[in-house]
Length: 317
Image (cartoon, one colour):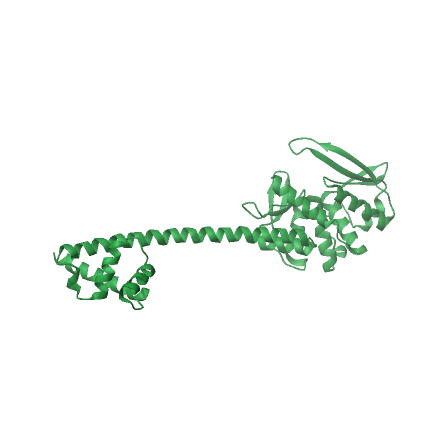
């Protein structure tokens, strides 16, 4: 999981460096707050808490809140426990009612806000916010391709999946499945993941993903070709042994001169000397013996003739 985490972190850090319009900033904040934000009532006022394990993501949220609303969230951090020990950074905004209203953030409404996703730029920014808050993507060097976003509410997860599949500039075949205490929106095809990263604007990590994906796919092709070569070699050896047995049968029953064909006789002698040679290799050797060009198909034709004659003779006995 270390590789997957580090690659996902690289993607997210790159996404924080992208320049966005005010409309896109608002949509990103809305997606982040809806998928990961915590809203509380404190002294009859609404408060908003958003957190991340990536400092650059926290800085991005801070700057967007300050630029759009002129507010200064309270910053804090805490050390996380367990196997993945680290630091979690948090932003706390007191009296967040106006901000939440502008972000169309309703804790009882699990829909994706239409006003904040009506343009391609806004829809892309909104899904970027969801990914920054709850997304992960496997490194392409791992054995499978997988990008996901873990969300707490089933209805909201399905609405995010619809945004993926119908309202983004590119349509993705995302799916939703339950996992422990959350609902996961995911895509698995390598090409779709690369398209998604490129759509969000993560050009550097998209190139890294594609390079690793192409290299891995090339290795898979090479392995398949090696397996094919191995299978062909096994078939060549098996055929060669059969042909040697048939030639030896004729040697014991009248000799190979009975074919009355110089080309056939020289080919059979070459097969006895080179049991594991391919038809192409035998054609090359026979061409040298006869000082004329002999094709692979011609060699194959002669061996078929040998086999037919062998079947005819052996069945008579």
